Structures are given as structure tokens and as C-alpha cells.
Length: 87
Image (cartoon, rainbow, N blue to C red; front, side):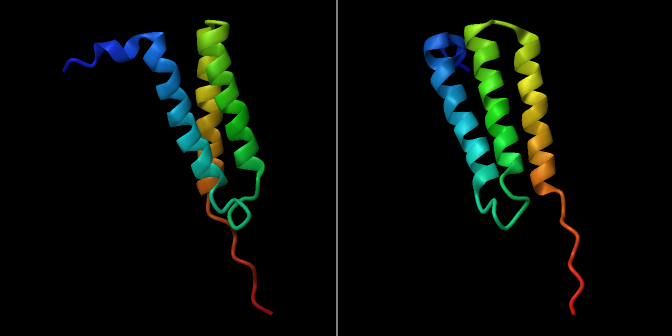
């Protein structure tokens, strides 16, 4: 497809940062009404782990741990809340 140049670090880092900003921004969107700021905090930690693990340390297990945390934060944020009884 001609997109092999995106695998270079010069393009991959900004593309990954932009994608992570979009994902973490979605966790923060209306956070007060959903599950609070817990999923947002976990998402920020996950994004940091992914960037540090991939670009600074070069450790795949740190990157995969960040991916798992981001998935967990997304599931936590989307889990339905119990309805409160009307009094």
C-alpha cells in the first residue's frame, strides 16, 4: 500500500502520541458523569508506559503492560453503573 514509511520512528512516535491522546481523551470525556476520574488516571499511566516502554526503554513487556492497562481502563469506563433506587 505504500505506507511502510510509517514504521520509522520519525513518523511512528507522533502517530502513537496522537492515537494515545485520542484514546485517553475519550476516557476523560464526561468523566464526572461516568465512572469518575479513575479510568482517566489509569489511561494516562497506560499511555506513559506505552511510550516509555516502546521508545525509551525498548522493552516489549512494558509496552504490552501499557496496552493491557489501557484496555482495562476502557472496559472499566464503559461498564454500566448500577441504577440508584428512586425514593
